[in-house]
Amino acid sequence: MERFGYSDDELLTLPLSYRADLLAGRAALVSGAGTGIGKAIAVTLGRLGARLVICGRKPEKLEATEALLKRAGAEVLPHALSIRDPEAVAGLLDAAKARFGGIDMLVNNAGGQFPQAAIDFSPKGFNAVVDTNLSGTWYMMQAAARQWRDRSAPGAIVNIVAVVGRGMPGVAHTCAARAGVIALSKTVATEWAPLGIRVNCVAPGIIATEGMNVYPDEARRAMPDTNLMRRFGTALDVAELVVHLAGPAGNFITGEVVHVDGGNQIWGDQWTIPRPDWYTTPQESPFPGR
Ligand SMILES: CCCCCCC/C=C/C(=O)SCCNC(=O)CCNC(=O)[C@H](O)C(C)(C)COP(=O)(O)OP(=O)(O)OC[C@H]1O[C@@H](n2cnc3c(N)ncnc32)[C@H](O)[C@@H]1OP(=O)(O)O
Ligand SMILES: NC(=O)C1=CN([C@@H]2O[C@H](COP(=O)(O)OP(=O)(O)OC[C@H]3O[C@@H](n4cnc5c(N)ncnc54)[C@H](OP(=O)(O)O)[C@@H]3O)[C@@H](O)[C@H]2O)C=CC1
Image 1 (cartoon, rainbow, N blue to C red):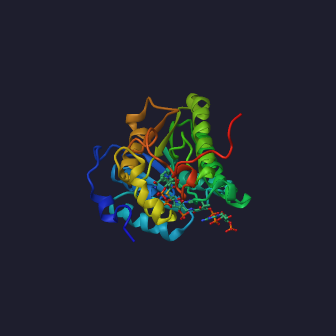
Image 2 (cartoon, rainbow, N blue to C red):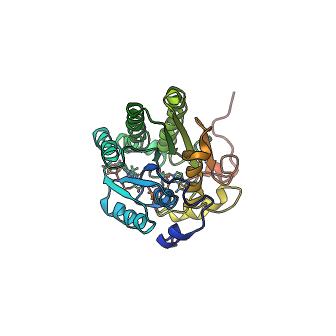
Image 3 (cartoon, helix red, strand yellow):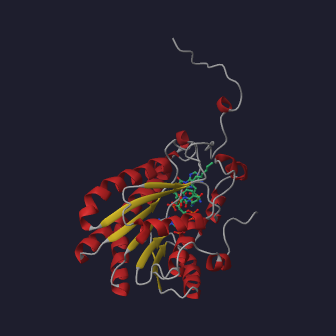
């Protein structure tokens, strides 16, 4: 199988667009940091001087990112949990406070879905995706905001979502959850501005990560045709945008959804499951209008 995503050495050495001490003295919490985009975000923040709290369900994935962050000279606190457990999330924020005095930036990257026709979703499958991507992200946002309020400290949240403006056939559950995160983010950007908390979303298009292996070969092969650049984006494309929004360059940006998608929001098919004949061959509608 084709390798998707960066090697550890690439994550540590690829040139960045920011000065090396940009985030010195700041602490960041990144969810889903054991793989793919989350790992690239954590390592990029660490290379720029931030201290890191990293979380995800599987400790062995976090250990790999921890080792990489140490090679980058960053202090790191790994903490295994499911973001679907609100008490565990509260404990995570407590642990971050005990170790670093609190965080300055929260990046909600953990998430995922499986491709399936919506008509076949089971209640358990639909709920698993909504619990992870919407509820889990919310528990993290609220726990961080409460801590910032209680510390009278400012904070920045970046939520990783997806390109959902036109829907995405095959992943309706995630479209519903991500649209929910976008609406939540815009709403609390307003409620929390008086607390000095900024809230933004990043919507990646197709990004080369090992997470892409959940899609069938045929769907993955067609993915470069879904954007104007005719290729996959990289985890660093996403990570550098996160630095912009969470760091000092983003000080006047809140309530925003920034797409890093090669133009997929305006052009390109988005099928993640085989298309029905309806969309591939000329059809005469069996449902004529009156
Ligand atoms: C052309 C443009 C394409 C753009 C692509 C779309 C943009 C997004 C890309 C990405 O996000 S890249 C990849 C990101 N990573 C992942 O998606 C990770 C893989 N997915 C998951 O981990 C799961 O899907 C999950 C549901 C998000 C995890 O939840 P949980 O661990 O609780 O789930 P499970 O225990 O595995 O399953 C619960 C329940 O869900 C149903 N289900 C799960 N997988 C499938 C499947 N492949 N097909 C059908 N149904 C599935 C099922 O009901 C499960 O219950 P049980 O049957 O196991 O009892
Ligand atoms: N790659 C792409 O093209 C796109 C990705 N995205 C989104 O970007 C994010 C990162 O994707 P990517 O890196 O490609 O995929 P990955 O599958 O590699 O990353 C997802 C991460 O989320 C973690 N995670 C999943 N569920 C939970 C949970 N309940 N609690 C804590 N952590 C969890 C996983 O770790 P563990 O299994 O250890 O819990 C994993 O590290 C996801 O939200 C994804 O949906 C959006 C659009 C496009």
